[in-house]
Length: 219
Ligand code: DX5
Ligand code: ZN
Image (tube, rainbow, N blue to C red; front, side):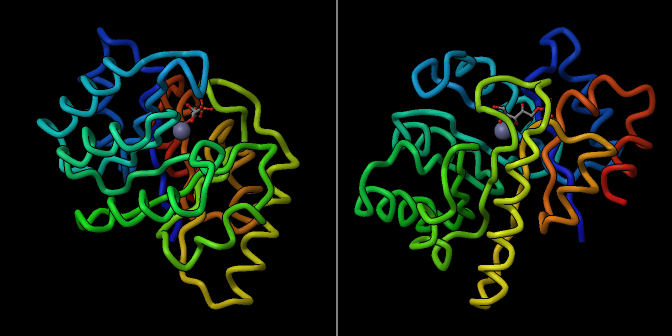
């Protein structure tokens, strides 16, 4: 079953509650919270994303799909675990050692929260193979992390195909999320490549009919 995770990154503060309500009515499955610390990526939206996550927790039952684009992973995990997110995802490019990676995974799982591991466009799936049996999802970035509204990088879908082939051959039950540049056209390509969760930001927020836009991605 294909699920849609709505990125809140490009939602204007003045329209936030209205957009959250419209996205929920349009039957997205999750809200994708893109936390950026100004170190791992240039933008810093830490306060705004916390504000959005708290608002969503108050007005919606949909799960928070939290994407940590941060260097100080441990502190952001502590902060977001208090919101009981659906899933907490960190970047493998940040952790540095197998020991730190496994400690982060354990910390999140000990709180009963699902764990995701993210790879940027230039990162090979070889980097995450040691952890695939330990996490619930791989987030494959199909744009360079840091901002919404970018074009999907086609080569990243080759990685999705490689990853899907590997997890199938090794009987690893894991979600594959594609994040960045998803619209009605690229969604089909991402699903064909093996993804089952699609993050969409600009395509949904700028659509005339959000319900239709969500259905077009899920098809
Ligand atoms: C980029 C974020 C993505 C992005 C998706 O760093 O991780 O979630 O906001 O937005 P669109 O769908 O507009 O590319
Ligand atoms: Zn994201």
